[in-house]
Image (cartoon, rainbow, N blue to C red; front, side, top):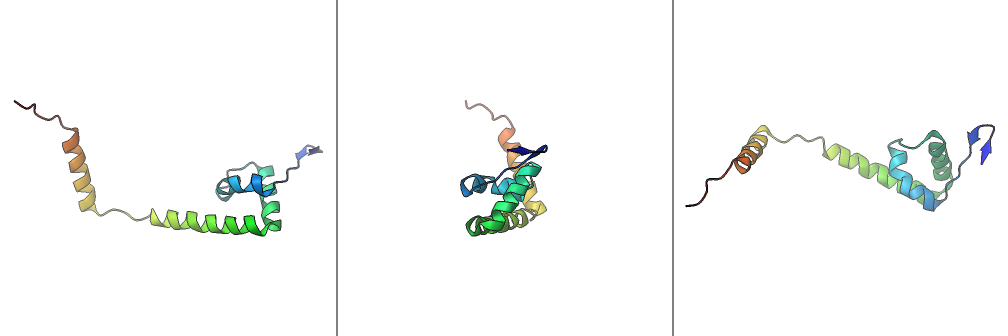
Length: 91
């Protein structure tokens, strides 16, 4: 429905749940972000799912901040070089 150039959109749970990660990452269009906010404000189940997925995303993000020690990097790079080099043919 369009009212004075503004698209009004309302999500139910079936429409909201698949969009939660896009909402968390702010990848939805402005009117969809607003519809998600409205839905989450009025739906305890989807608000709970939003909280769980937001926390999970933060845990994953923090876990990916660890840096491998230089010795591990050197071993991996060395092994990759070995695997890429041509092998001598068997006689």
